[in-house]
Length: 243
Image 1 (cartoon, rainbow, N blue to C red):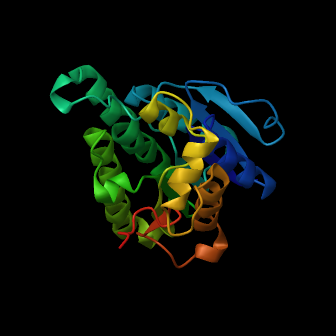
Image 2 (cartoon, helix red, strand yellow):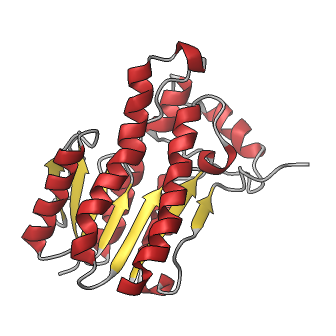
């Protein structure tokens, strides 16, 4: 049986990723602080873990890989936005929490997963952000961690390719209905606001969690067998400069 691990698998994007993998025959382990919604039990199991703790993260990955006899896919989807106040006013411990969840947690999980993936190859996908390329005015540390994921993916792709392990990133823009967008604003988007944002994008639509999940699934699939070290941007054109 093919085995996948999805961190942050209880969030909006993570749930869609887990569902896509499950429908393709993967048995998926969800690593998250919060339990996933009901409906995924047929193909996913949940391990509660605080990804800020690198030892707990390693232990959870190791336990999941041992139970299923290996690992084929690792998707690091966990992420927090952190403070959106002026940088110097942000509590330092909250800024370090962003680094711990978004970047250090990814390092810990991959570190534990690679020995298992070397046995039969596989795919690692980091859910980054267009903020990793463009920077984030509202949350600079968030953008920095996403840039770190992009750099980590490129370096690992070079190192692990000989073991048939592919490493890529997906970089979403503003994804409708996600906690990150809610956290950045403090309140949900109204329909009028959603339409106004979409109207400014080249494709005139907001990206959905399902859009991101399909991009992740593609990079995990045999259809992407010759793709490694890339960042697949899924943002309805948000990162393009409009004239």
